Length: 189
Image (cartoon, rainbow, N blue to C red):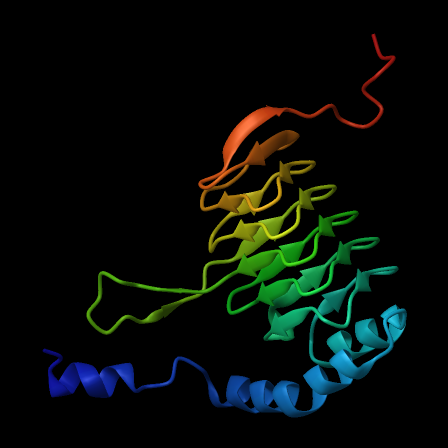
């Protein structure tokens, strides 16, 4: 049974007043505008995200059906893309490098709860997806995970631990399948 003290503590919001205001503004203004934009209006969606504090590089392509929570915790590098119906749950910082592909229905989850504490406080471990990585369709990247440069997480793969650079992963939990050749490595030596 939960004690009254714990019940009260669990009712305390983990968000600052500023975050609460931003969240409401995003829910009622930013997100509807983002979703109502035409499918090829990438520049409009980049501008909306920047207006809400996201760091968005040039030529970033984010589809209108992408669901983003707390975009002010998102940074995405040049020439990266996020596919239809992907979820970027940015309770903690989510950093996406350059030339990264986040495929349709992928889920990046930078939020969790401390299950060892009876009050279950909100945790916000960051996620980092390094340059030239690919998170394939319907894959999941958990809190605190770093996906190394050039790594691939295959379709429906689940990464709960960091992934090494230039390696292909698959499965649940994700396991290394094979190495991946770096661009330009052929013909050397």
